[in-house]
Length: 130
Image 1 (cartoon, rainbow, N blue to C red):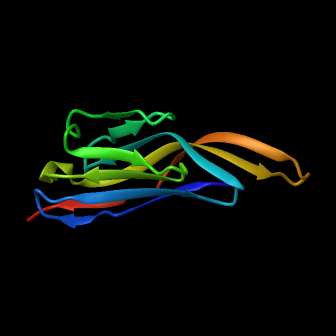
Image 2 (cartoon, helix red, strand yellow):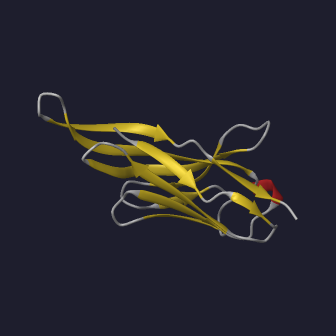
Image 3 (cartoon, rainbow, N blue to C red):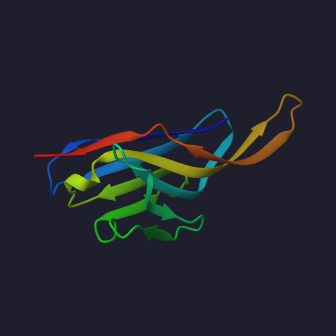
């Protein structure tokens, strides 16, 4: 009933900025982002946490992201963002959105069903090069 989709990746020069977006969508009547995070995976490396946000909006950052990246969420809790400034070549990776989504939908019997599941987006590539 729900999915996450990232956008906003691309090629940027060192020192430049990008803003990644992650939109929650689906067939459920209600979808809201709860605990959420941005991860990244560079070629040959493990996926790593970049920034996270608690359900009540408290952010946390990896050491490499502190002072340069900002995680945020829209008021409707349907979109997650990652503002990345002063990008470095080592920031190049595929960036993934991860979130617990609360959904509410009608089942075949006409009953409202509330669910909470963890979802991943498909990733968006960030390249940092001159």
